[in-house]
Amino acid sequence: MGKDYYKILEVDKNADDETLKKAYKKLALKWHPDRHKNDSDKEIAEKKFKEISEAFEVLSDKDKRQIYDVYGEEGLTGGVPPQGDGGFPGFGGFPGGGSNVKFTFTSNAPGGGFRGFTPSNPNDIFGEFMKQFGGGIPTDDDDLFGGGFRQGSFGKGARRPGMFQDPFGTRTSNEANAEVVRTIALSLEDLYKGVTKKMKITRKLYDGATSKQVTADKVIELQVRPGMKAGSKFRFGNAGDELPNGQSQDVVFVLEEKPHSVYTRDGDNLIMTLNITLAEALTGFRKTIQTLDGRNLAISSKNIIQPDQEQRFSGEGMPTKDPNRKGDLIIKYKIQFPTRLSEKQKEEIRKLLDTEIESTQTATQVGIIHKNSLLAKSPDRSLLVSLLDYYCLQTAP
Image: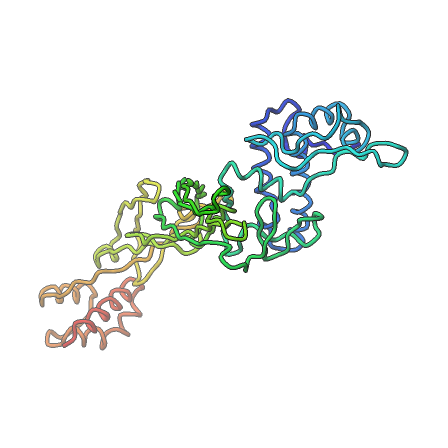
């Protein structure tokens, strides 16, 4: 039995071109080796990525697919001669027609048979396919999504770690002027929900007839996924200025996060500082805050809030790569103490604490002298003492 290309792409045998493209894009992005950091995971991903690319190369080409449907993989690799001379153009299923890669049959196989179809470099297939999306592939870390194949993994044209390449050529990442880097600042709301940004760039090209530089505009589209982090990079191969050596710069966009008036981000978690009054800290409260996606979230407490206490709300943070999981929302409470107390108010506090205090003692003395005795009475009263002690130290002359 040969390879089941339909099963590899997770489509049925009647899948049309659009279905094949969607399936390939989903699986190629999932199994691209640059998304897998561990050696064991990368080895599995390389094998999967190669199989996915080979399956798409065959099924997206009308002639290859017809031979495969009738004769299977064996028919492609040597059992069936082509119809007419020459080869079938590769990548026939891609938008905009084929490419320079040819699907050829040769007659030098043992016994006079046909050696047939040889899969193309999966990097080339992926690069050609992604041209319809502007060539930009996002990554959530500082490693550029472009290198990562081991040398020789897929034969000629395979990339070494630390290199990037255009769809049909290789160059080292430290080549002078090989890339131009720009930042794009996004709001926390955009990073939470995901957003599509269209960027217009003006590039310099060499006129083939005059050898003079001319300018041309190009619109690049960035698909920012929900939950992407600051520092994530989008690389657009050959989208920049054309260099004198005939190569073109890569354009790299790096995401930045704009400061937010309410939330700060810590990984997948969101942090918010909520001011509450001393009365609310002691007696409880109920408040409503607005989340980044516009929902109203009820925040309440019936317990006494300690100074600098935090409260965690699971699943109310930033989206993650796992669509079924989000980070947490962490609320840090900041208690707002009154700026001053009248003598009557101080006396009421003394009565509330149920202490025997001489009226001549200052509030500071109350906090220091009677602190230990109050600690033994109840946890609630010990908090009141701590709060009073804190206030007294802040207002002491």
